[in-house]
Amino acid sequence: MTATLVDGKALAAKVRAQVAEDVAAFGEPVCLATVLVGDDPASHLYVGWKHKASAEAGIESRDHRLPEATPESEILDLVAELSADDGVDGILVQLPLPGHVDESLVTSSMDPAKDVDGLHPINAGRLFLGQPLHVPATPLGVMRMLEEYGVELKGSEAVVIGRSEIVGKPMAMLLLAEHATVTLCHSRTVDLAQHTRRADLVVAAVGRPGLVTRDMIKPGATVIDVGINRTESGIVGDVDRDVAEVAGLLTPVPGSVGPMTIAMLLSNTLQAARHRRLGLAVPGS
Ligand code: NAD
Image (cartoon, rainbow, N blue to C red; front, side):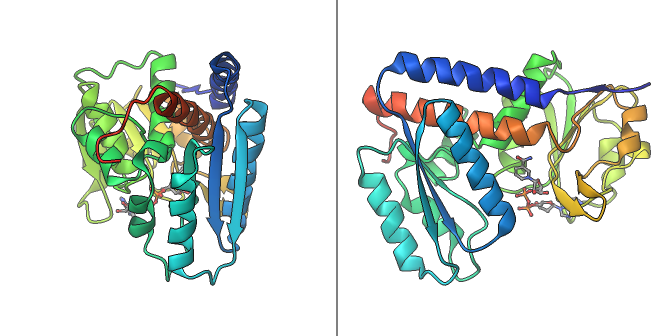
């Protein structure tokens, strides 16, 4: 078997075009503010892409870049300022933050109605309760891809590898909401392959090249590779290339999950703007 490769770039372009149309129809300015602390080159690249994509969709953006040594209190002050600013609809704090900053304190300090990354406890809790508002863009993009490619989730066996707040956990919740039977694997999972081998869907979100090999995949399964790893041979995911010989559907890295993440961030920002203008308060905000 040779897997069908998901064309995430094409789907992302479609989502972005729809967001652009909806932003124009909305008729009011929509604004995303990003906060980036430190010098991590990958983070600077990602934030640059987010601004470019925002501009193309007609979304204004504000770019706050702070030095690595910025005290936590200053970051909290900036987030409070953006939360109170009526001209800002969405706030994205690019992670990771430097070691001296408590990430969860920063994300919990923002107005949950503007938390377009879906990391505030209110948004995470809403997803857990099956009442999602802002959902992290990467797992949301994965769900959009699965829908586009007609992957049947109801009653399927899904294995998510990685339990981060931004990918693994929300991914598991979204799949559960679609009636998949979900197994969440992580660094302490004993015998990962025993779980993945019976899965109809495997989502790998770890950050370790070659973690998922072809012998771990059931023939015909859908394999979503969220991993981004910089290696000597370029950017690779968590899934070995020859998994394409057994999987039914596979996301290539780069060019699948990444572009969808940016597209869904734009969609979340428009959603935040709509909610705020329509006065749909987020409980707790
Ligand atoms: P993280 O470091 O926060 O979490 C990694 C998870 O992997 C942890 O939950 C850990 O328990 C698990 N893990 C570690 N070693 C393991 C092992 N041997 N077996 C099973 N599980 C193991 O990372 P993250 O922020 O969730 O990101 C994961 C990967 O996805 C990274 O490569 C990141 O760059 C990538 N990513 C891509 C996008 C995108 O848009 N394509 C977005 C976010 C993250």
